[in-house]
Image 1 (cartoon, rainbow, N blue to C red):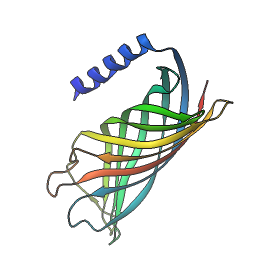
Image 2 (tube, rainbow, N blue to C red; image 1 turned 90 degrees about the vertical axis):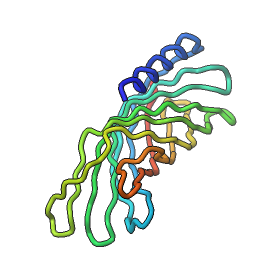
Image 3 (tube, rainbow, N blue to C red; image 1 turned 120 degrees about the vertical axis):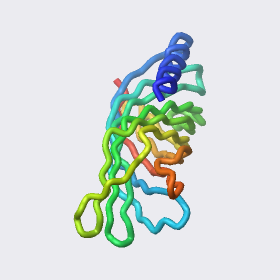
Image 4 (tube, rainbow, N blue to C red; image 1 turned 60 degrees about the vertical axis):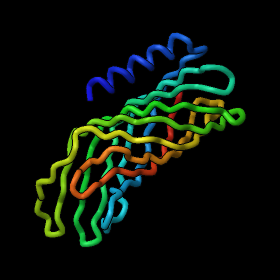
Length: 181
């Protein structure tokens, strides 16, 4: 787990050496998340994310955008249960600018669990073992306005299991508003 984060930070450092421009900013937004797996009867849960971004320009059409985010995920059971998980996430998005301002984005996301709670329908808390590390793949698009504001929309497809039995993975739609300084 630590090796993945160190490798990601090292890769970001290498890209920054070749970057033509570097911009920093902040972003925040809403998450609509759920758990994916066989025989799960769950509904989406609303949470939020907030954090810092950097964008390394790699030419006229390409850039790399690493982020450091606090994010809430989870799901609601159809019978009234509620699962909430909190992560520190490191997405690294490769961005291709289709035209001025509009970008298509794809990239991996490594996340460390910092908290979780599974509340049953009767209000009691259940003890559920969740993996500390989550790896996902992000797909999305964004638009950067000339005044520094930007909007982004993405889907995070969980790759690793957050719980082994049953095989359960995270999935989340994320809508963000941010500002580049």
